[in-house]
Figure (cartoon, rainbow, N blue to C red):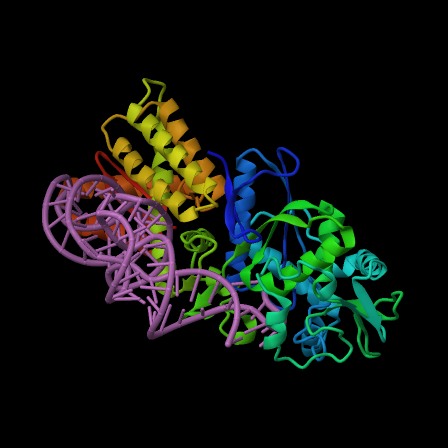
Length: 483
RNA sequence: GGCGGCGUAGCCAAGUGGUAAGGCAGGGGACUGCAAAUCCUUCAUCAGCGGUUCGAUUCCGCUCGCCGCCUCCA
């Protein structure tokens, strides 16, 4: 079985075949950096991260471009909106680029914390003005765009397949148009490529049409072309950006390049709070930094990945708590496996472990190959956990080779692909702590032997208060720091 | 009004034309001095109503409810 991907463009699940064998070129719309990122962003970028990780683990070399939008994103319809970055910069009394730097850093800080791998390239819109001007010029030359009073618009009627991604038709939209139409537009659906700047505007550049700045959609077309070429494999993004943003990207790129744009479109569904979409403008955003104060990064990933990426995900504290608890048993398995491995010796292969490893590999791959079905993949992981725990429960420690195979399988799936394997902090590197713990544990064992349970329990309780957990197993007591 | 999606146990959530993965919570049991960890076991007929079919949760239609996009939002 090979990878199948749901392509929004065709509304079907298709076999994934990159343009160049073994090499995947991928783009994903990045954030507009005028505020801290919230969990809605986390859902998109964690989902895309897993796509990238899985492609890599499947043997593909992946070039992943994710832009940073720092100019041109307006607060409202093109006619009346302000530039989001400029508005917020004014509110914070800083230079727009200072604001951009601050929130770009904040974004990557959050993504790093969530173990989202950095993109291969993270280009900024403001650093690609010449590329954007070039595409606009090409569009004018080809008759797909027109200039009016220093602003340039894309002529949607010039693209005969306009609306193919979102399934919209110009006639329908015309009928439903509610926003006041810019009188400069020839068609209500036309969108801005370049906007004439007012004198007080800070972020502006010279162009063949005068001083101005680029529209919101053109940046992605320009940066995708610059780093991935005219036609590339995968374009990802949030579902809410399908129209108009992604639709317009396609229209302008294909009109300018006379070549197909992205071949597969992957859209990640929204995240909701109490059934309502999470959005900065809606005032219900839960910031990633806040969430990290309460749940581990792995639990947040676990929570996000427990649903398929094309499904809506509703955030509740209960669900996040459940994710944290569920994750714990996986973390425990990883710890037990490593403890066993530390004591294991060469020996005869443990067939039950070999079998469990086989099941996990097969089911995990099968699930991920089916349009990145992370929830099915996680089910395989939990079944593996049970089988392994049973195998580890026996008297003698299984052979090292078997344990190594199990550890590798777990690291390859839960670790490398899903990124939910917590590195165990149980092994204390400080040399004094283990020695002190040995003293405490042996003392407590003596108390237990003498049936002085009250004192023995006091040791355990007080250690728990300082963050150390004890666990009495057959013949030994182990300790670890609370995770 | 137009386009699209969703409705599976207390909660989260996969999935299939032939009577439903997994996680959390709950019940029962094993192990333990007690815990912890772990294991065993138990817990749904898939919003409602029709239709197609030998058979539908899965296909079609309708109804109800919820959501997204059409204007900025990942």
